[in-house]
Structures are given as structure tokens and as C-alpha cells.
Length: 374
Image 1: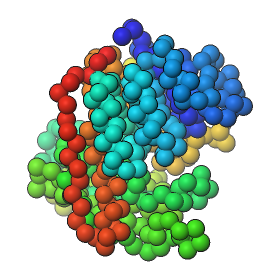
Image 2: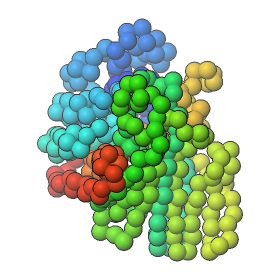
Image 3: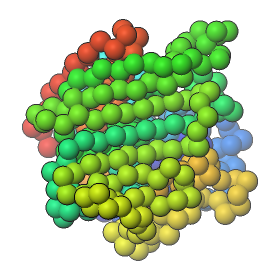
């Protein structure tokens, strides 16, 4: 492996948020970007001074000078692009979700095992400042024994690309599922899920009927359960990606309004807490990106910075974990197995909702003992 990981970014909508982070990272070199729309490709590449430019994923994957790709293509393409990249000998970071079927999750796991390259689902929810704070409470013992976890992701997707209209809420549930399973340090084993309400567009175009899907997960090798609620359309609620964790000594609850602060309970006594930024855990060169995005002007900001406070400052943490794992020759967090379980949790939850709340057992993805090849 070269001293610096040479990276290509596929998809320059949300993907553009990561360009300056990789450019500034001391162990990365952003060498190419890929975008189907040529005008957009050249405009963004010119802005950031990027020489390598591709209008097809196939072209980028043929480049022998690229070590790793960060995939930000539309959801339906995540599986095929990830598998193609792993088969081409590239390390892969992919925005969520990993795939939209359990079978495709399994295909990605096999491709990672066969290639011995890194695969990391770029799950923002396990690198937000809020998650890092709750993780510190767990690791320090302040939470005590975790007793229950709850998560929610409620977001109005009107105005986003049309493919969202056909997406079941739980097929994009990892932002709510991931922090619960990561804090519990367990995988989801089984799920019962109920659909509630209806979405208006389902009557005219078909597709998923439920406005809200709510799931109860049993965690593997644990006495814990976790609850997840997800909505995409026709629900009156401020945007929220939240998690609550209840221990026998302390509990952490997400705030009702984004402008408020979360609450920590010690026994029955609650107090609001200020969450630190955690930029000091990053290389100095990329610390500024926990609080700002690519463009300074508000009208150019990606929606991730106008909804959800820039994914809680997670973007540089994600990029750093991906690069550091490659440099150190270790599996990233989340690795391919956690990514498959977190994604399959939502896919199986939707299947349960369609079957009136029947219990669905998640697949157990086979873990390989083969080390990641740097």
C-alpha cells in the first residue's frame, strides 16, 4: 500500500461533502471523481482542482492508481457498485444503506471475503457527537447495565428524488438502527414490525403503503430488545435522527426539538447536557469539517447540513476511520458484517410489517477469518 490511500469518489451530490476532507487528510489523496452528468462533473472538479474525472463507474474502477472508492450513488445502485469495486480490488466505503435486499447484503459480504479488501458502510449515526458522548457514558460505566434502547428517524422526503416515493421506510432505517446495536455491541437477531397509517401517493402510484413502520428487535446473545420507528412521508414532525439508551444507573434521551439539548437521567433526576464536538479525536488537518460543509453559502449547502446539523459532525470521523483502517490493515467500524446486519434489520422489519407483524429471523452472515489486505 502506498503511504497515502488514493481515493476516488463516486457521486457528487452528498459525495461532494467529503472532497475537502480527503484532500486535507494526512494519509489520503483524492485523485478522481465520478459523476454521470458531465457539466456537474467538471464544475465540481474544477472548483476543487481534481484532475481525475470519470462519467462512468466502470471507467473509474479500471484505474489502477485508485486504491479505494467512496460510493455515493443512488440507493438502488449501492450493491452493484460495491460488488464491482471489491471485485476490481478496491477498498469500498458506501453511503447507507448497504443494499435493498438481504440477498444483496450477502453478495457484498462474499465479495469482501473473496477480495480481502475493506468494506465500510458510511453510517453517520455512529460517528455523531451525540453518539460519541453516549458511547463514552457506556465505556466509562456511567450507564451501568443497558436495559433498553430506542431509536427513530422521521424525515419528510417531499422534494427529494422520485425513487424515495417507492422506498419502504424501513429500507432506510440504519440511522435509527445502527446507534442502538453499536451501543449494545450486539447484532439484531429477530424482528416484529407493524405498519401504521398510509402515504397519499400510494393510492396513485402503488408502492409501500405505510406512513410509519415501528419495529421491536430482539438482540442476538443478549437479553436486550430495541425499538425503532421510521417515517418518510405524510407525518407531521420536525426532522429527527434520534436514539435513547436506558441503563440501570443512567439514561440518555434525545431532545424533542433540534434546538434543545439532550437529557441525562441519574435515577429519576434529569438534566440537560451540552455535547462536546470531539474534533480533537481527528487529525488536525480535518478537524474543521465537524462544523462546516463544503460550501460556505447557505444556498449551496447539502440538505445534510440544513437538516440534522451536518449529521452531527460525523463526516470527517467517517472518512478518517475508512482511511485509518486501510493504512493499519484492519477492519473498519462498521465492518461488512455489522453493515449487513444493520441493513438487513430494516429489510426484515418491512417484511414483517407486510406480514402483519410476524416474527422474522435475520440471517447470520458468515464471518471470515481472512485479514483485510492493505
